[in-house]
Image 1 (cartoon, rainbow, N blue to C red):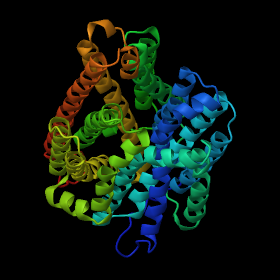
Image 2: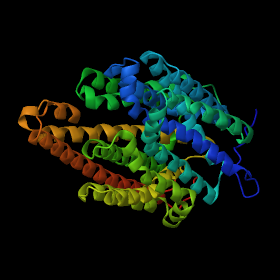
Image 3: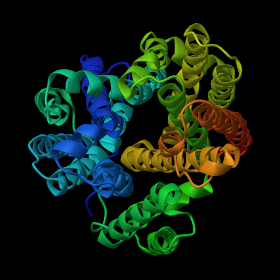
Image 4: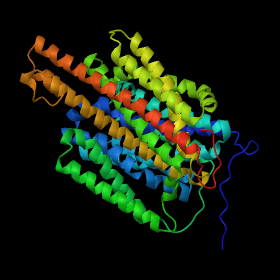
Length: 506
C-alpha cells in the first residue's frame, strides 16, 4: 500500500523567500477574472452596432462568462486538490488567455459568446487555484494578510472595470478590452511557472466524473434561473424549470457524494458548524453587499447622469481603501485583534452605515458620497477577508481547493441573488410610483423615453430615485442582518469545535 504524504504547511523555516511575488501573480490573475465580469458593461452600445447584436445576444455575451464560471467552481476546486494547484493555475491562465484572444478577434455575436464561455472555464480554475495556492504558501498572521490582499483584489476589479473599459473604448476598438488580457496572462504564466510551488491533496480513488457533471449542471441551472428571473419573470417556464432542474441535480449530487468512497466534495464538512456558519455568511454578506452596490451604480448613472465609466471612477475610492488597508496590513491586524466573528460583524455594520449615509443624506456634491464610500471600504476591508478565512480555516489544509470552490460558488450565488432580488425590489417600487400613463414601462430608460417633456419626465426621475433609495436601504439592512447572523453562527459554532479540530479564536 502506498502512503500519501500530507501537504506541508509552511513554517518560519520553510517559507518561500519570494512568496509575496507569488501573491502578486495570484492577485493579478484574480483581478483579470473579476474585471471581465464588469468591464464589458460599457461596451454594450458598441457591440450592438458593430456585431449587429440583439438584446438576447448582448445578455449572453455578459452572462455566458458568469454562468460557466459559477457552474464549474466546485469542479475546479476539486481538480486543483487532485491534479495540483500550480498545474490548474497554469491551465486556467492558458484557457483564459486563449479565450481572451478569440474574444478580441471575434467577428460575430456567436463567436464572442463562445469565447466568453471559454474564458469562464479558465476563470473558474483561476478563482479556486489562486486562493488554494495562497493557503499553501502562507501561514499564521501572514496568511490572514495574504487572504485580505487577495479578497481586496476582487473589490478593486469590481470598481475599476467600467472606467478601464470606458478608457479603452475611447481610444481603441472594442476588441482591445479582451486583447489586453493576453500580455497580462502571459506574464503571469511565465512568472507563475518559475515561482509557484506545486501542491496537491492526498490522491485517492478515481476522478468523480458523475459528481462533477451533476454539480456543474445543477449550479449552472440555478444561477441561470437567478440571473434570468428579473427579466423573464420569476414565474416564467424557463426560470421555474431551470430552478427545479438545478435543485434536483444538486440534490442528486449531494446523494451521490455521500455514497462514494472518494467524493469530489466531502459532505462531512457540512457537519462542522463553523464551516456551515462561514458558508452561510458568504451568501448573506455577498447578497446584501453586491446587490446594494449594484443599485448604487444605477443611482450614479441614471439619477446623477454619469456614464458607466465615470460612475465606476467615482466609486474607485471604495475599492482603493480596501486595497490600501489590506496591503498595509492594518486590516489583518484589526481582524486578529477582534477575532473573525467580531470582525465580520463590525465590518458589515460599517458597510451598512456607509450605504445608509449615501442613500439618506441628500447632496448633489461628491463629499457625502466619498465619505460613505470610504466607510464602506473600511467595512469591506474587515469583513471580506474575515469571511474567506473563516471558510478556509474550517477545512483541512489538504482540501484548500475544495474550500476555495465552495467559497467561490457561494459568492457567485449570493452576488447573483443580491442583484436579482434587490433589482426586483427596485423594479416593483418604481412601477408603483410611476405616473398612471406610464404604468406599463418596463425600465427607467423606457419610461423616460415615453414620458412627455417637463413635469412627467421629472416625475419619472423622482420615482426611480425613490425606488433606488428603497432598494439600497433594503440592501443595507440585508448587509447588517447578514453580517450579524454570520457572526452569531460562527461564535456559536466556536463553542463546539468539530471532531479532531482545535478551537480557534473566532
